[in-house]
Length: 163
Image 1 (cartoon, helix red, strand yellow):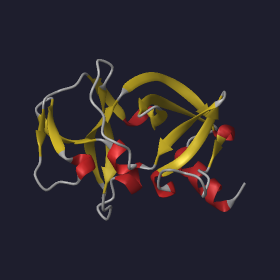
Image 2 (tube, one colour):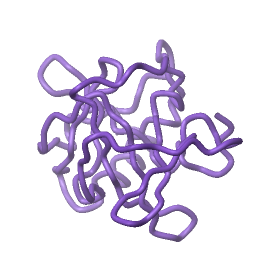
Image 3 (tube, rainbow, N blue to C red):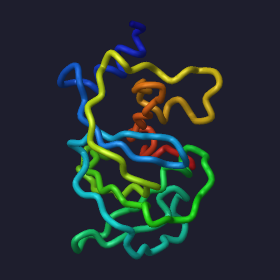
């Protein structure tokens, strides 16, 4: 195993050989977030646009009396914005940003399932032929004939991010 893959694997799979995740779809691709980060799955809620905010976190919403940012990570990945459908959902996650636990909503096209992924099926994204920034992807996990993308939330939500 390469040092880079070992580092990614240790970060994603710090507790063991399997990782429990929530899978969801964005623009025809399947993504996954660690299930322990997920606080709630919501139907779409009214949003308030924040003038001057980064495009991929351009609005906020009211989550149980708290104002939280709503991210559309498809925009961070350079995908086209799409219209919301009856299957669209918001996944509220708790994520550490600069040492502070922060709630963030992530817009999805569809939430699929909670499942377990094996560390042995993970690999780094290829450096050639990817349509997204490789630093935005922690790893790819092969499941059957498909790949599940584990986004690198730290890189995506970094304050130095320019998208």
